Image (cartoon, rainbow, N blue to C red; front, side, top):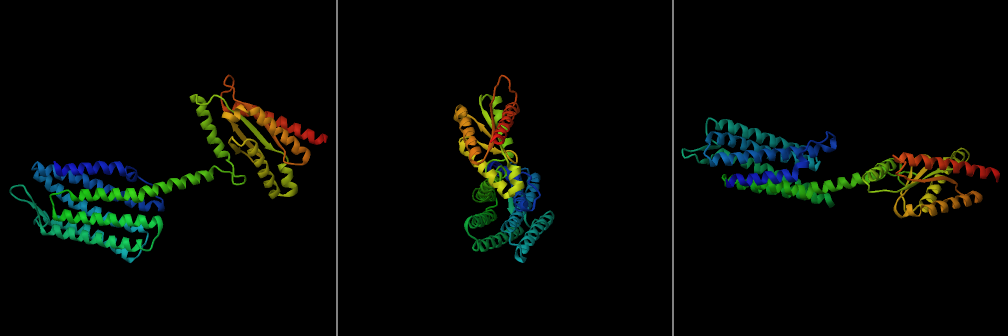
Amino acid sequence: MYYSSVGIIALLVHLIINYEHMRPISQAPAARTEKRYRQYLVSILLYYIIDICWGITYEHDLILLCYIATILYFIAITLTVFLWTRFVVFYLEHKNNFSRFMVTGGIAILIFQILILIINLFIPIAFKFNTDTEYQAGHARYVGFFAQVLLNIITMGYTFSITAKTKGKTRSHHCAVGVAGAIMTGFIILQMVFPLMPFYSIGCLLTTCLIHTFVYRDKMVEHAVEMSNAKIVALKDPLTGIRNKLAYLETLKDLESCIDNGKLTEYGLVVFDVNSLKLTNDTLGHEAGDELLKNACALICRSFEHSPVFRVGGDEFVAILTGEPFRQREYLVNSFEKEIDRNQKNGGVVIASGYDIFDPSRDETYTDVFRRADKKMYARKNQLKNADADS
């Protein structure tokens, strides 16, 4: 049971650390390397299962089943070597005649191994079981293993030759792939010399752990950072630099979820509308209009600096007040309106605003609060227009 127990442990660790990598992936061109790695991992998975079955059937003298498992074993181990070579070629992204030669060599070795096993059905040139049900290796077995070792050495040398021309993270990733290939080569040699020991299972386990730790975990972190940066860009208004309507909608979902869960019991919101944007665009041009919006946004953000501010339309902004800003809401809103009144007299930026708070006794959703605040904003807008007309 010792032989199979190593395979069982290797199989479990393999599934734990490589589960995400073995899931189906997209067909996008950028995913082709990951697809090749997934195929390699699946071949390793099949090898572990076959190797475990071989150990169990051999230990219990189930010769016919063990014979079948041995045939599958040789096919599986050769398949992993071929798929490893193909993965490395795709991973290095250096397509040339030599890389194509390596892939073709892997296919040739796989076909050669299958031919040996077919011949072995009639003439035991690769392996046999003697009268005492003991496994005996044949000369052709060593020829097949030697071909695999040679292909792995070539692949390893090719990897390190490409690595020498790279720098930074790419260099460390390539080095990890090269070292993984060296480990696999060493354990194939051990398996060739000691046929009744599960050396190749150990080698595959070390190889996949190395790739996972020093290559794909880094890539997952890099991908997460890229996705985070992309999300930040997607949620940012390009003109003002504050959060856009998409961020606003996501915040509303979180806000209502917190209200429903009882995590938040009070909040307020201020709705803003910039006056004279259309007039500025029509008379002074869109660059002047953009400058007006940026100045208006700066004023709102300065006045409500501890609350999230969103641009939800062309000249419309919203600030959501929770925590300490909510408790200081009257002061903040009054101070803002006083500054707008001064701006109107001095020819500065004029922004209409409306404010209201969430009332659990009458508000079912955020929209109820927004409508009241929006109504007050339009009342304030008319007040500012009338004051401007009177002056």
